[in-house]
Amino acid sequence: MEAYFVEPSRTMHAIKPDSTRLIIGDSVYFHFRTVGFTTNPAPCNGDPMMPSWTGLKTVIHPDGENVFFNRAGDSLHIFSKAMVGNSWKLYAYSNGNYLQASITSVAITNVLSIPDSIKVVSLQAYDNMATPIANSFNGKQIVLSKAHGIIQFYNIFNFPQDTTSYRIIAGHRLTYGEVYDFQIGDVFEHNISYNNGPPTTIVRKVIGKALWTDSVRYTFVDTTYTRTLTGCCTINSFSNVNTYSVLYAHLSLPINGPYLPEQSSISANSAFDYSMKSGNGNCDPLSISNCDYDYLVYQSSCWGEAFEPVYDCLTYTAGLGEIRTTNYTTIGGNSSDETIVYVKKGALVCGAWVSTPAGILENPSLNELNLSLYPNPVSSSLTITWSVSMGARTCEFEIFNSISGKSVQSVKWEDSSGTGIIDISSLSAGIYFVRLKTGNFSLNSKFVKE
Image (tube, rainbow, N blue to C red; front, side):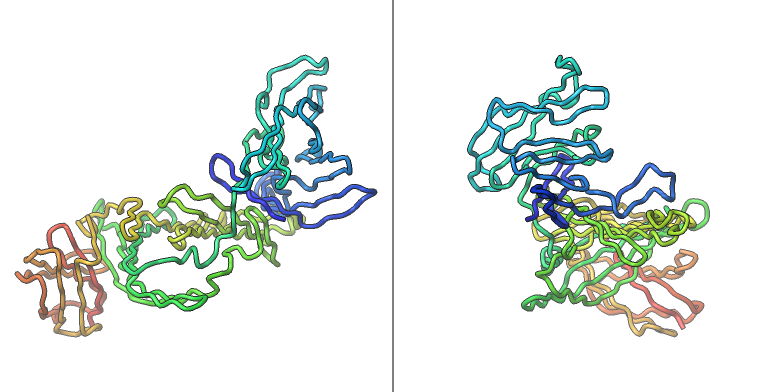
């Protein structure tokens, strides 16, 4: 049986034993492992076999006593069969102080939308003389359920330093079908940076969809805006338009396969870690991150127990696809990050367009501008076909050198759609961009001069 929990930050956690054992009448449950960090100095501080938030194991005695173990191996005790008014030592500090647990109420309430009997356990700290003392856990509660066991607790592995409360939720494993649930007309803007350099923006629009039983094929059009520095302070933006199709199969399968939130998966030279966040409205739905840590590099110096902090992370979100891709390595200090900053799905609009210089993308709408160039490559005469559907009449066309960023030629036509020819025979061989601009809207396309 697996159960999902969430903390106030919406980070999700899970409980599911990896294995069980019966030892002299006691049931021992061993919990799954996670990727964590030790107190060792970097780069030997990563451990792909760290116990999860529930600790390494749980021992359940026949009388209903549940024993958990924190990072130091100290025990926490829960008596599931205790009644209202019963009290016991939940946790003992090394100085003789202790946390007392008391059953303060029993009630029938809905747990995961099903009526259930629950017990509320209240906490209070005492010194070694049984005198109440101040403690960060005073007044906090643990909640037990007859059908679901623990439904509210704290990070057992980091107890008592961590006072974050975890509560049970109706979680599930995010599927490919939920992640890649797009409709024709959906628009996404991705912002990409590499080594903290000038970013690149990709505006992606869904223009086609074909759905089968357990797979879907989308056709996308990407407009890429690359920002480069020219001279002292000038930033120029150019675009490349690319149309392509992607097939997503096995829509019913979970993104993270058989693994639960925070559960690690170890291969020959890396460790994977899956983290999930619960949804918080249409613009912030359920998401999961899959991080791949490389620990082979330092396997010798770290005795095979740690990994070098190099990682690749992909974050998948329901209805938005891959919303973030991150790569980082301490070798050479290389890093890259791609993040969705704007989403338009039907009437739903989330985020804000990236502000780009030179009017390239001030308020774009991919339905309003169309631009095509041919032949491409071209040697002398470039044919331009365009259409503008927002009512504008004047269309300006400007040609830029892709390396210098300088404008090398321009022309203006007083038509919202049409076909024109520009003589480019005087241009040097190389890559150029044509910018169609009308009012505050613009669209760029690339061509090669032979």
